[in-house]
Amino acid sequence: MNLLLSCARKVSDPEALPTLPGHKKLGQAKVASLWSTLCFLWNSCVALFLFMLTALFLEDTKTPMKGSKGVERRARRFVVRSVSLDDIKLVKRAMNVTFNDVVLGVTQAGFYRYIRGRYNNKTVDSPHNMRFRATTIFNLRATTRINDFTDRDTDGTWGNKIGYSLLPFNIRLNRDPLDYVRDANATMKRKKASLEPVFTYYFSKLVQMLFGVKVAGKLSHKVLYNTTLLFSNVPGPLEEIMIFGHKVAYIAPSCYGQPNALLIHVVSYMDKVMFVISVDEETIPDPHKLCDDLEESLRNIKASAQTA
Ligand SMILES: *[C@@H]1O[C@H](CO)[C@@H](O)[C@H](O)[C@H]1NC(C)=O
Ligand SMILES: *[C@@H]1O[C@H](CO)[C@@H](O)[C@H](O)[C@H]1NC(C)=O
Ligand SMILES: *[C@@H]1O[C@H](CO)[C@@H](O)[C@H](O)[C@H]1NC(C)=O
Ligand SMILES: CC(=O)N[C@H]1CO[C@H](CO)[C@@H](O)[C@@H]1O
Image (cartoon, rainbow, N blue to C red; front, side, top):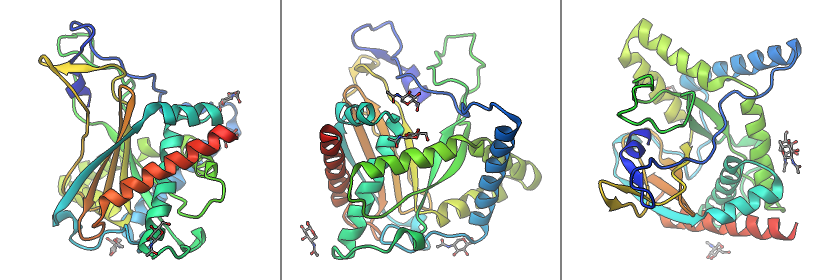
């Protein structure tokens, strides 16, 4: 993303690099006392332990969204759906949560609708016996500033520096649509009180150093395979951009070959938020229905936020 944007310029000012929305740094939870430091370390160790268990055997419940063996080699379909950034901001302001919380809430609400549809509208299993997790990817770079190629001050390193975090999703019926966002807010609060992405990053590095890149690849394959989806939420530029003089209509990154039936990238650009969905056709044959469910969920959540 950084590389792409460093090639882009604002349409309004062809000399200037695009601006990204303000982004908080990782691990910003205030570590005030010895007790909270211990909690922080404890959370991080538990998270790393769960990460390893996931690689060994801890797998997600079989749902209509969970891929089966060989999913990484089957044909995939890519669909995009854009929603209004203002709708998401409206909910964000009304509930005083983060952009990410709203997006995660909408995603979980949409998934519930989708899964219920696949079970012919019968009420889905209670949340306690359904394990449904997303592998999320965190950017570990200190800033989300766009590096300019010509800028000698940057550290000069390119490429991904990412850590994983396993995010539990609550796939259940909530009478109040805002509860989906509250759930996401609570989950993210726990995640922010841990250094899970940093731990998993160094753990993967360590595995790579000790056993080589093949074993590290196998490890991440196992973790990804045993979770239901991959989820990534990246802020894009706020104003219209152009690349080598061509205006950019939308930004929709995606990926192929990962061992998940479902991959969601959420990217904001100007006044739109794009849900980019990559699915295994065998597991999710109707990705447009999934997009409809996401859109409908945002509509419900927005309506509740307006009346609340
Ligand atoms: C919004 O949330 C932030 C952090 O969670 C808190 O510091 C702030 O006081 C809240 N604002 C309102 C109006 O509730
Ligand atoms: C499930 O509900 C939706 C909307 O309420 C409806 O359009 C659809 O036909 C229903 N599906 C089944 C199998 O009953
Ligand atoms: C979000 O989480 C914070 C911190 O736990 C909490 O204070 C706040 O009330 C939560 N907001 C909502 C809307 O649930
Ligand atoms: C459902 C699923 O993917 N389960 C796998 C989790 O990982 C273990 C170890 O790789 C496999 O044996 C399971 O089949």
